[in-house]
Image 1 (tube, one colour):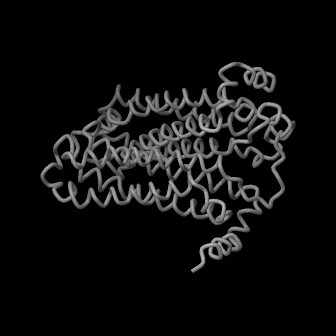
Image 2 (spheres, rainbow over the protein chains, first blue to last red):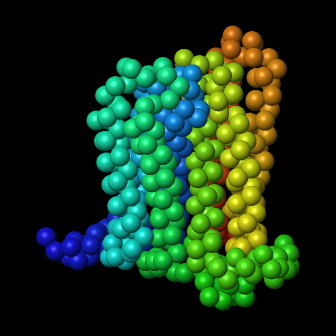
Length: 189
Length: 173
């Protein structure tokens, strides 16, 4: 399938047009995206810190994982959905953006990292479940996970600075003159 | 406030950030988001424990001891990065409705967290024995979580203050 055609048809879809034409939808979707990713990273960090033996060291790892990870996945679903909705409004631009691509790459690596954990330290949980920290591979996975997610957050944020938003709606009536006075060269998002 | 924002934008730290904004602003915002994740993660775990939906192998006291310090630390990080963002882009932050409503809710959220932790530490017996099972307290846990959700949404809406229409001071240029 031709990718350019595919991106064009995403942009031409009714939902994408609906979001572009609304003054409110994109900001609300983006806010929900931030809320979702904050919950994703916040809950993952709790697990990673447990693996590293930095916090919650007296709790059973398995118990914590079953308590927390379902919320992580729910929040991830919300973040992915809102991310996809933002993507289709301007698919061609995001697809070719360097930081968007890096972000997707880091997400994939984070997924592989998780899979690696399941196949290594995850298989021997019964041996270290009550121990204050995970074995060395588990700790390495945790460090990598924290670094990857912070990288993903930074890539996500910088996408907004390196792309122009598609907008067919009338430009927002902000104090453009005042902004220009302060920052003649940029309009940050 | 506009005069203050104009003055602030001429100070040297502000000028420095403006001149390096292509990476400084997104970097500060990213650290701010990491702090937000720590706050919402901590609030979420405490609230789930109060609701009885997670962490039931821990007492309330243990839950507070685990997440309270991280909440406080993250709030300090947010204050520091938040101040840097205001210095870097005074008008964008200060001349918005979203920013001031957010600041009000941050005060409310912080006050709730401080009062909750203080009373729990003082009367943890009553809390563990039944107070946490009362419907009022469970309702408050949900309200607290929603306060922080609104804070996150409002933080992002600072960039889109036009959604407030005539409530936004930015529209009355």
